[in-house]
Length: 322
Image 1: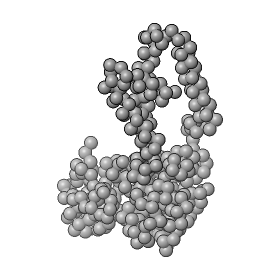
Image 2 (image 1 turned 30 degrees about the horizontal axis):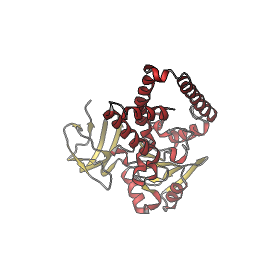
Image 3 (image 1 turned 180 degrees about the vertical axis):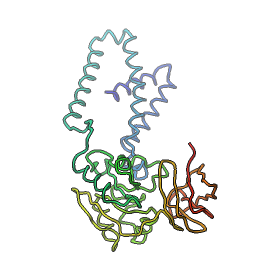
């Protein structure tokens, strides 16, 4: 209905004295329509999640629909046809009722305050069985794999519920450069996991200090289990595999020590080494207490540099001022 009224109103604008406005609306609506409904057919646009462009498309169509509605209320030539406005209104009501029925019968738009026992079992395993000295590699699922975690982005809640550091997160953060370090639907760090060599996977696990893995995609499970001695299956919850990682865990890529992380703050202690590299990303404005020399260092293909500290004291704190 919005598409019909919006297109009708835009056409009227193009043929009126406000032709410039009409052309602008028509051009924007056409581009957004093609992006929203055909963009996913173009390989390099697929990662943009083109259906999200439907929201701005609807906003442009609303302008055209508003114009044609006002046009119908003002001009007597249209009002004289008494059947037109009631017909449009009736079609709008029918479209609303149809969408309401379709949504409610599918049961996909339900507000819930609790998660299912299966998901709770995954959360409890992470909380109780994974090491706090390493990160959790969590494979997220979106519409590309049917939202395996009962229609939700479970990774959004994992850090808060379990107090574990996470590599992963909802795929709708794809446009954030920091989201290079992610894992979803058979893709690890923006690459098909089946294309990664054993050494590449081991190096990534060491770089990001991975201590446990939650995975569901058959390609991910098969590839990780094929790396000799890397992971051990601890438990299964439906299609989800909960695995331990067999490697030494450390927050230092170079040097030694302990690290305690909190919001915008890293506390390092028992530090050894003339130069140390932390397995944490560098950020603009990062300062140290006591004053230390902090250098961003690029490692591998991660677009975000890591933190290098030169001549560190045995204990120091890094933070981003608020």
